[in-house]
Image (tube, rainbow, N blue to C red; front, side):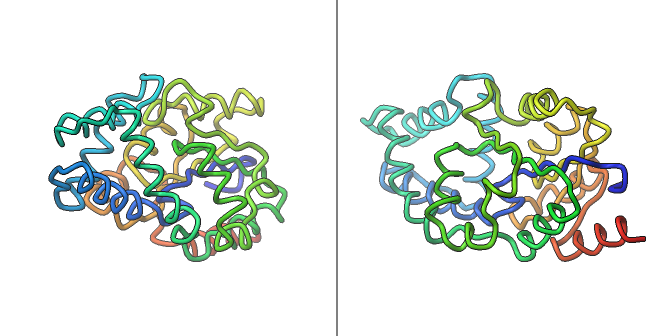
Amino acid sequence: MFKNKDVFIFDLDGTLIDSLGMWNEVDRLLITFLGGDPLEEHARQVRRETILSEAKADPDPYLVYCGVLKEVCKSELSPAEIKKKRYEISASFLRNTVSLKPDAAEVLHLLKQMGKTLVLASSTSRANVNIYSTENPGIYEKAYFPDLFSLIYTRDDVAQIKPSPEVYGKVLKTLGVPAQRCVAFEDSLAGVQSAKDAGLDTVCMHDTYSEPDEELLKEMSSAYFDSFSALKSALTDAFHA
């Protein structure tokens, strides 16, 4: 499925980097600070992802999410104040804890050496991407995003976040390439649905926090890989056969 592809589009959280566990911990600390019940980790993640998916058409889905936390925690803080606190809690994690998945950097460099166009299409903020690119040495020393990716689109660049296909449609329009020449790499139901609805072949990369949806993800995706090492082998076989 790779031989006729020119553009390789990667999601970020849960796909290239180990970060979903971080956001679960950030929300645990935030909800505890607000005086609410943080729930067990999977339930906490599902609640967040469900709210963000339902609010995808809102100008700021994360502000909607923080509004829900305000209500369930019975907090006196405004949604905007809760959102600010969430990112204050996350700052150290973003700079020091988040890391690339094993062999992810090697895959990116391999594709770049092959002359492929690399794109980052993420529902995280551009501010977070900038932190990874300039303040997290565990990431930028292995994979410097501005050099590797021809385009970087974040939630700041679209009206609707995934599972809306908007970000992928914007990539196709900007590059002027047909969907058939592109392949997307995702790790979650929202991400895979987004890419599929844009008409792209979609590879799902294993992520611990998506394991409850693994069988459905395998059904929805064009291919499924347990690791970037396995993906690297498949790419090498495809382009050097």
